[in-house]
Amino acid sequence: MKMINVALPKGRLGEKVYNFFKNAGFECPSIEEPSRKLIFENHEKGVRYFWVKPSDVAIYVERGAADIGVAGKDILLEYTPDVYELLDLDLGKCRMAVAAKKDFKDNASKTLRVATKFPNIAETFYNSKSRDIDIIKLNGSIEIAPILGLSDVIVDIVETGTTLKENDLEVVETIVPISARLIANKSSFKFKNQEILALSQGLREQLENK
Image (tube, rainbow, N blue to C red; front, top):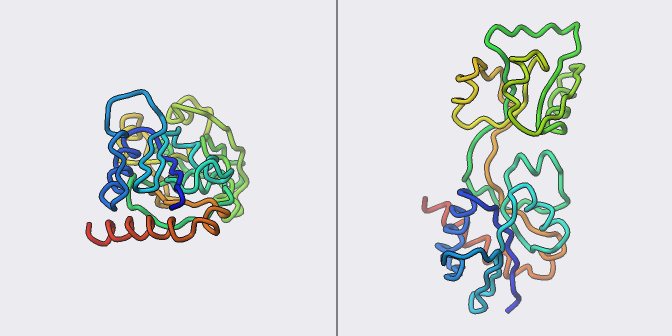
């Protein structure tokens, strides 16, 4: 049996994802024990799990350190890694959206200033509208950018919209729905095809029985 290396995103989403794998018959008891370890193996089931930062999952998979992994659609759209997207796990659901101050009116004759952690997604979206934009790349607390006059709008992930409301912002339009996706390394998919498909099928059955 070939060992499948699985990159799991650290945090709440990763724990939900692991439960999916476990219920599909690919459990690894040591991962549930309290420890600071990052790599866990179950030789009997042919799986090796490791925890990585959510935004790094796609890099581990693309470069072959992991055969498969679970990454948010936002990461896949932003960084366009060369991987196969096998399955929408219907977890971590939210949306990528444009938000602005409640009184905002877009003046098409001016360059639109867009603050975001996702410059590629923002650029692709506004290019499709032929809208002239100035992207301001920020790494955190982007909700304050329109309030302080740094930007006209923001492009960000919206879950409940509570943070926006608390800062007197609102969603202007939704760009794309986001959820967790099962991705595979292209070479691994060829050489460990049976193992990856078995695992993927186990997860698919979980989804159908939800």
